[in-house]
Every structure is written in C-alpha cells, then in structure tokens.
Picture 1: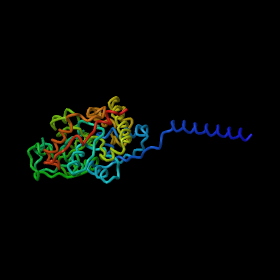
Picture 2: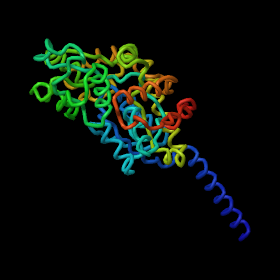
Picture 3: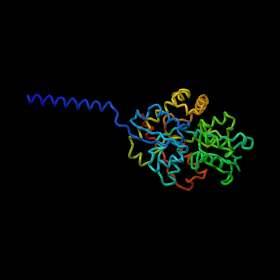
Picture 4: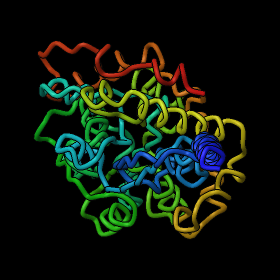
Length: 339
C-alpha cells in the first residue's frame, strides 16, 4: 500500500510539473520595464512611438515601456546620460553632438528622413521677412537652446549669409508656448512642428517660410536626405541589453509599417483627442501631406548621417574641428532583424 501511495504521489508531482512547464510556455515572462523620454510625444514627428504604445506593440514584445514627454530633445538627452531613462526618442543629430563631447550613443531605429519641421514668420513681419537672408536683426524662436530646432535654425542663418550676433535665438518651447511667443511678438520667426505649425497658419497668425516636412523639401533646403526622428540609446546599455533593444526595435518597426499601410484618417483614429489640438480634420490633412517623411523599415538612409554632420559643421556646433566616427552613431542591425 505504501508503494502504491508513493507511486501515486510521484505521478501527481510529475503531472503538476508538466502542467507548470506548459503554463510557463504559454504565459509571457514578467515584462521588462523601460523608460523612454520623448521630446513631445504628441508631435507628429514622433508618431511611431505614440502608436507603438497605443496599439500595444511594446506589450506584445514583453516590454513594459513608460513613455515620458518633455518639450525639448536637448532636455531628453540629459535624462539618458544620467541614467534616469533608458532611451530617447529625438533627433539623430544628438548622437553626433554627444560623440563630440565624449559620450557614445547610437540610433537603433530611424523613424524619418526629413525633420518634419518648418520655419514660420509672424504675419505682422511677413512683408519684411521673406527668406533666411532677411533674419538679420530679428528674434528667432526654437523649442530650446541646444535642441535640433536650434541646430537647423543656426544652419539656415548661416546659409542666409548672416553672422553670429546679428540675430537673437531664444528657446520658447513647443505647442501653445511657441504659438504664444509668436503671437505676443517675443519672436518674429520660429521653427516648430505639427500640429502647432498648421494651427498657426490656419489662424492667420503666421506665414510659411521654410518647409522641411517631406524628404523632397528637406533635400532642397538642407542639401540632401536628413535623418531626423529616431530612438537612440547609450552604447554601453545596448551591449548589455541586446534582447531588450531588439524587442524595442521590433515594436517600433511594426509601428512604422502600420503608418505606411494605413491612411492618415485611420492613423488618427488610434490617437487620443488631445493630440489633435482641437482640430482633427487639420491633423489628418497635415499628416497625409507629410507622411512620406517616415521610413517603413526603420533603417538609416545610407547618405543621411554624412549630410547631418555637414549641416552641423556649417551651423558651427561642437563637432567643428573634431573627428567624428559616424559608424558609432547608429546601427542598422536591429532594424534589419526586426520581425
């Protein structure tokens, strides 16, 4: 009887172990928590991360991603360097700028091949300011000093033949803060993104001056394809978290493919109302016009990094006179392997 009881218990134990193993294969492991800082998650240029979050693509990859939002990419990179966030959704130029300062980060998935930004002039100044050559003596607004909008504005100033000191560039924030600065006369010209841009144009508060929202427009103004929005991570973190990086990139490439395969109307339907800034029809219209800036496979354009570096040197950023190894500023490995 004792042998029979022992056999019965052994059989039950094996059955329970088998059931536990089967359950473990079905249920996902505890999600890895990752914090991403975005330079304004509601901006259309950062649409891929907003969609990946809203559509559950991060959760599908076994990740618990917390998307944090800040007004400026310049502030976001500080969080990455201090370790308070694991990744930044911002512009690719930050990876080059940081290398010039001895900090190594890499873009692991490229969202866009154009800035998705535009320069507008306040309606009251539109007759006097018709191109960057007319910026002399005026106040120019960007999201923040050290930001990508600051870099691009510096480039346009230099291209207009204007020297440092002949203009004032101020960080005025994004969204409503930017619009208020333009309306109140604190700036005469500024660079901003959608949906703020089209709201100002529709209201008659501003006129379009330099358009960088599509690859064709960016190539004309910036001398070539200009990779902008991306996800970048610190190089040491990438080397020790390769599986997590691949899962992040899988989710974001899936989001980019969703953008490529769906209309602006269908995309907008997945977003919260506050992203529309009170005008859904205008949001859809502007997204349809600039959707071509997104890269469906997330792979860095071959000629893009060199053009960004050239723009930065013209703008007299920290990279001037310093050797830059562009191969260490991005990788296509994870995007090419994305499922």
